[in-house]
Length: 424
Image (cartoon, rainbow, N blue to C red; front, top):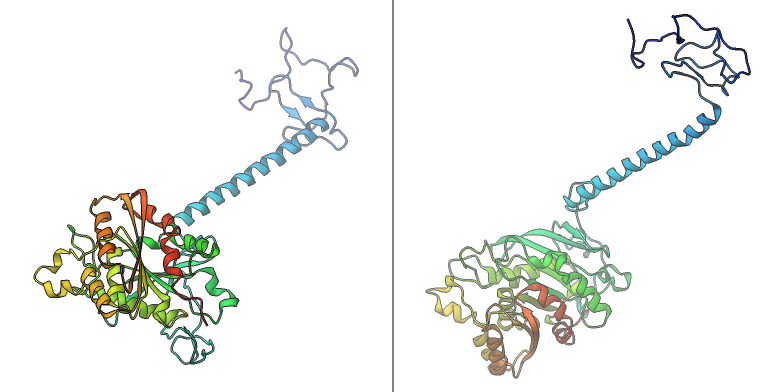
């Protein structure tokens, strides 16, 4: 029976003639000696023979390796281990990024508890901060401390956190996102109260508030503007605007519509109370403002005009000017009580207090009446205690990506000049 070279069987050395064992040639005739008593297959050669290599002519089996070849192969093995190790590390890195992207612990800090500082001892807030003097312009957090969970962490280490607020005055329960600039935890401002901006979205405004997302850059813009001397270092409160989804155009105008959830009370009482309970704030209305776009711009405008003793300013981007929810049907009296035009007239008649309204509108707004309506409002009611400013954004559209960059070139400076904070 014959054997192929790779069948694992050893064949004897063959000559061209009849089968016979060939004698070993003497040393020095150009052929490596075949050791008559050499090592068996798979065994190491005797000590001292590492410099020789013995091979069976048919099976190409090696009885040991030349020393030089062994030396050349060792780095190759090292390289293979290095490549394998690097591959494992690379895969681990990719896996970590994937798990962080999908917010899988422990590769993300989303969901972790977030604390925004201390409150006076005995106040119910759980902190140990010193009580400020009676004449202080700042207010320490009163407590109780809300259960804030991290929604995302910004590159500067600050957090956007979220809590579920059970509104005591409105009876509405919903989410509120909050953010404080890095200056809030600066020891230099440890005894200072910060101004608060309540940022309201357009659209459905439920189940989330789009200002909480860092892709729009509101938080980083405020930090940048403050560094440039254009803005106050506002703390942001970002509540849901409506109690449910925008179903077939139904929304609540940020108001207490009879028979509906009291979203006006939620935005003007419960949300500010949450901020006072958990943050060092400004006691007076000089530290409280709204910012909003579209229907959120309307809600902020109306809140300042309706409660000028509580809020001083608003930035209104592409806003509605009058209430227009279909839910007002049959409630004309209450609708009039939430109409910014009528509220502005009443404020002018009473001669104050002063409010500051910064409008910005794009020339490519989806509703072509937005700019004319805002211009008409300013022309009619922008007098006496109602201070107004309008920024027309050339080519600007009805969206947050248009509004945020332009806020720093006018509107935020306009309101920051008349607001206070940080204050002691």
